[in-house]
Amino acid sequence: PYDPNGVGQGQAVWNMGDYYSGGGSGHVAMGHVITPLQAITLRATYAGIEVVSSTTNTTIGATLAATGSDLILVVGGCFGKEMEDRPNLHLEDNVDDIILA
Image 1: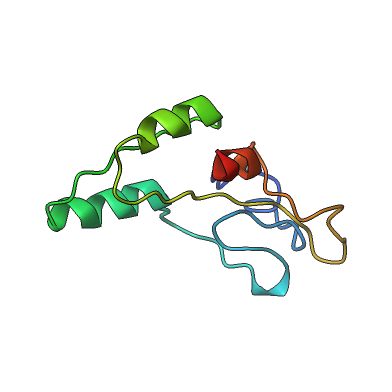
Image 2 (image 1 turned 45 degrees about the horizontal axis):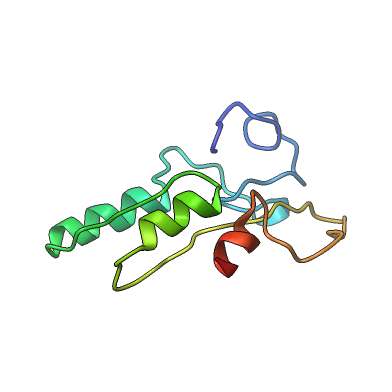
């Protein structure tokens, strides 16, 4: 989650970013952050669409939320640092398994 006082965000560590605005020379400190779920829910409500969500990182929670849905959207991410290669291309917090479920 976004932490304006966290390492790489509020402590001037230029190569450490976050999921919302990246890192390195292109990093932009955010004054207000809205999560993907908040944005999707807000827009869907405006359009009269019901959003069913699971904010857990379990395949069971995701599967239950997806049951009977017309559309499934999985939002995930991974963290990296400038000048340092990631060890793999997997997403964090069990997102790969949630997508496969």
